[in-house]
Image (cartoon, rainbow, N blue to C red; front, side):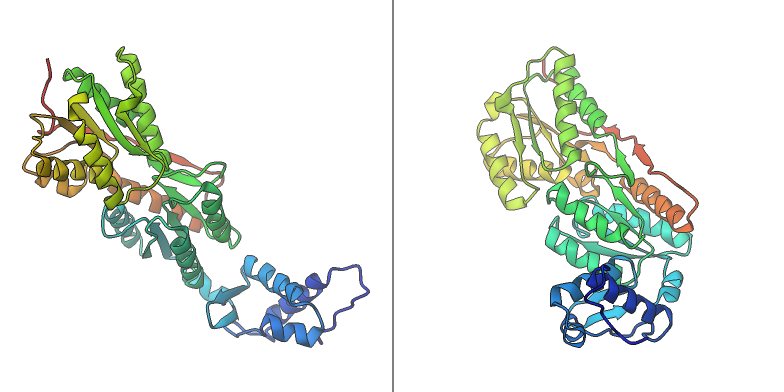
Amino acid sequence: MPLIIDKHSPIPQYFQLQTWLLEQIEQGVIKPNDKIPTEEELAQKTGLARATTRQAIQNLVNMGYLVRKRRLGTFVIDRDANNNRQTIVGILVPDIRSGYAPELARGAGDEAANNKHSIIVCSTDDSFIKADFHTNRLIEHCVGGVIFVPTAAPDEKNHLLLERFTRRNIPVVLADRAISDVEVDFVTTDNFQGAYELTKYLILKGHKKIAILVSTLFTTEKQRLEGYKQALSDYGIPLEPSLVFAKPEPYLEKAYLEYVRAILTHKDKFTAIFAGHDRIAYLFYSVANQMGISIPDDVSIVGYDDLAYTNSYSVTLTTMSQPIYAMGEESMKLIMSRIRGNVSGSRKIVLKSSLVERSSVLPRN
């Protein structure tokens, strides 16, 4: 079928070009893995504006017929081969080297291996730009599904990444952190209740002056802050704004070291510290040691996550243990059920955390 664009037709010109390209693909004229002409080449051939050819190509990318490869061009997706690649699952996590992400990926990977699935793990460093790059990579690999821990970018940016997958019928499970106004599967823990229990534990140990350091950028730590506040309220302890250190940015060690140092400079104002997660707790240990402050003799501290290394401190950390491995397992189970196509509607799984009492808290009279 020749490429003829009727510029007098009421049918939009981009749609005419899109239809022609689709027919060429479905009839096998343009074969799987073939490179199609560039936007500029199509514009020259048809007399259309380049923006028009771009729209036609992008629509076919969105429909899952084409894939753009950086610096290489746009290619026809081998949809039959894709069916054989449904057992590859992508995992987008903040940092595969540290924090809870390695354990989450291990849980997902073990569950995948038990069911003859493979994984591709990508670190976003909580950056939208890096997540966008890895999103392209996973789409190019024709993954069957994606486990996604949202980045530190605003929700609308994370929405864009989700839409890139869902437009191609690639199922997504959100792990740990939520995104507002989306209908996708979600696996998390009860961060509000966990923080409530930790704060209650400190209160019952006699602590009434409890400082807290969290990031308000993520739903998880926002919920922990609310749990902390609710426990204080329920036990009749007034909230002291000067003890609430809620930072509107993600955890970066250099910046948070300065926050920790500033907080410990005023250690006489509180008897205990609620660290928003264990990596923050580690900074308190480090800076306290430099400043000659004893944990727990001078100040008690609790963390959140129960990362493996926190039990290796000379004063072991009391913390809220999240079932991170199970979070990875459950996320993978949801993805596999989506790949098999035997579910409908979004599902939410909330796992229970448990308090692990160690030696970083001393009772106060």
